Length: 426
Image 1 (tube, one colour):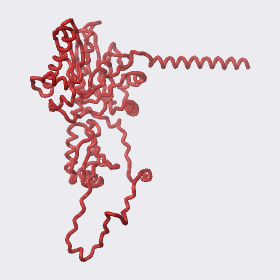
Image 2: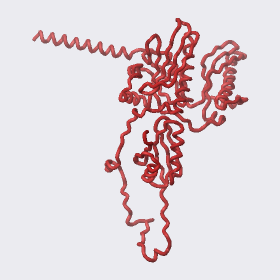
Image 3: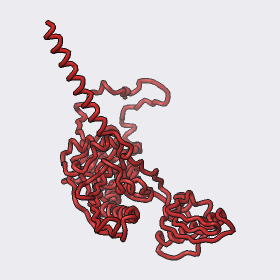
Image 4: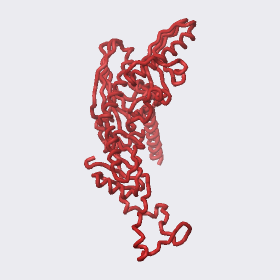
């Protein structure tokens, strides 16, 4: 018996040691402060970057104040030219102070009476937009998860360590972009899920789990491959824009800097160009949500259990105020003239339709407006590359509208107060 007792104690000790070792290994995979960079909060304000100033003043504070004021003047002229393509005389300093929301210091050197800096200026979209005449609805993509991959030294990295590529995406201000970027922190378990190998896994089930975790509709995969000529010397960056669970190619380009210290600047320029590539792909209908990532559960209204819903009985009232009895038709009423039919009730119906590109929005609205009885149709929720929602004002009931849409060649699915339409083959 003593032999069995000793044996059990040894087995328990071994299991305890193995469990502690396994826990240490798992903790070691997640441990470390050199992982995870929180992205900057992005707003919808206009942003102008790369504004260079060189100003002198009575002292260091006065020089810096004058430098920031000069940056506001230059940034407004740059923004106006970017928006309208023409030059402007600028605005008064008092007016600029009311529309500038922030000053971003990219690089600065402060002397006793001199201020040299490269600054960024943020303009409030509502106030500046009213002056520029570019206010109104902005087209944006569905939320897209960013999986930034950097190849350096022959191996890919995403969130295993803090890379310059991850830092560049974290400081990128996406508020003025048409792409709705979902940028992970790369901390904790995210570094175990979002890896370079995940980009090569087309499994839709696995991708759905990841996208649901981050609240995204699809994924984009910006890749940079850095090539060093020698330590501290020139560096070449090959940038590639890919997207989707199948890792599809969109476009690529190459940038080069003369020394390794300028890599962050090159990566910032690369992200700006990648943003333009993704925006162009969105407007051309290339960058669109993969339908295999969206699960739509069809339903049949006839199979619904109406007892689960609180539906009031719609039986006619026998007596009550405001209810007039209908007299039976007789010979006297026949000659009084023809009856005037009661006007159909006006109802507002939500209509879901596919919008792979900008043109699909206007085409869908025009097609619905052409239906007799439709008094208004406008897109209330826009998702380029996905499914948008149109608010339709219709003189009639939802069943009549569904029938009219089918007559136009649409495939219609009817729900409670809403319709889902699509063309054949979509």
